[in-house]
Amino acid sequence: MAETCTVDIVICSGCMGAVALTPEAHDQFLADVKAGLEAKRPDRIWNISTYSCFRFCPDKRITVSVAQQMTMTRAASVESVIAEILSFKNI
Image 1 (cartoon, rainbow, N blue to C red):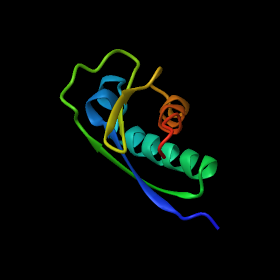
Image 2 (cartoon, rainbow, N blue to C red):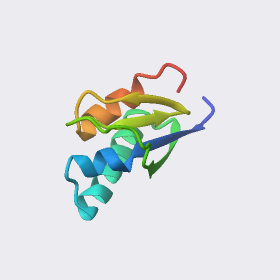
Image 3 (cartoon, helix red, strand yellow):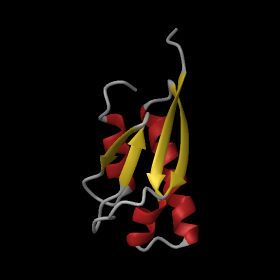
Image 4 (cartoon, helix red, strand yellow):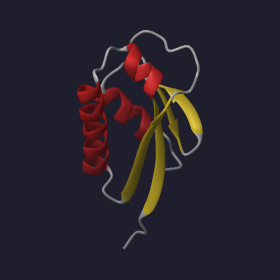
């Protein structure tokens, strides 16, 4: 059986605010990202948090840090965040 490991994910709260997510939608967005990751990679423990990266938050994109490596999604959607996170080879 494969060993389970924890993957630390930080999603920029500034970018999430820039795409006009309300506090309620913010919480649901994070829950949907976590559920999607758990469905696609149940062999990982997904530790998701938010923090403002203090960078310019471009329109319709979200800054994400995966295992301490920063990247930018192609769109401001749950699916795009999940795809970007899973694109990292070291997770």
